[in-house]
Image (tube, rainbow, N blue to C red; front, side, top):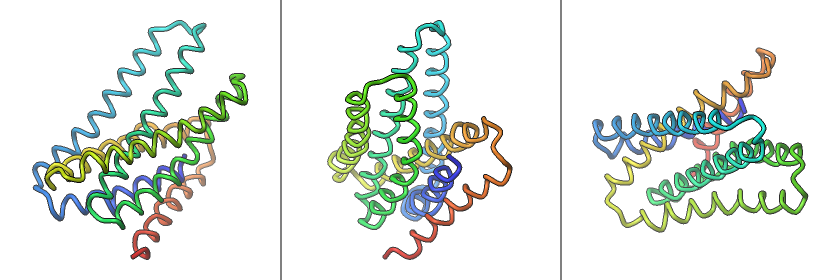
Length: 205
């Protein structure tokens, strides 16, 4: 989780926000960034309330909610890749690499949780395929539907995605990584992820 959080932070810092600031209106970009963060906070608040409203005995319903939330997050990641690709091929490639690396721990956690909860092997296979379909489908939607939109619209959406991802890192990923009282030295993985993506961003032409 720490490593994935570093990847996402660097992705926003080195690719998403620089493009929006370079070509977009500062006021619109900052507003889009704020709305992206607010969107994530709203989704997290509503999902938390929904889970609390169900008794603990309804574990199947709660588990299904977890899987749906993860699949929706992957769709959003795919849309970010697609929108980034409408700017430059390099941006799309770096976003695909960064989000793929950061998604690995999430995918592993999802399948491990499904196995722990007794999901059959065939159902876990279907879930694995759904992870791929969601991120690929999101990328297709982001590129196919938005490539002909005005540049200003795409930049605002990228700023919104930036705010969403940074808030995801600070409000969920890092707290989740620290929930089990991991060693303080594990924070080096965050810097490692950030540095790896920075290296990719600076060396891939």
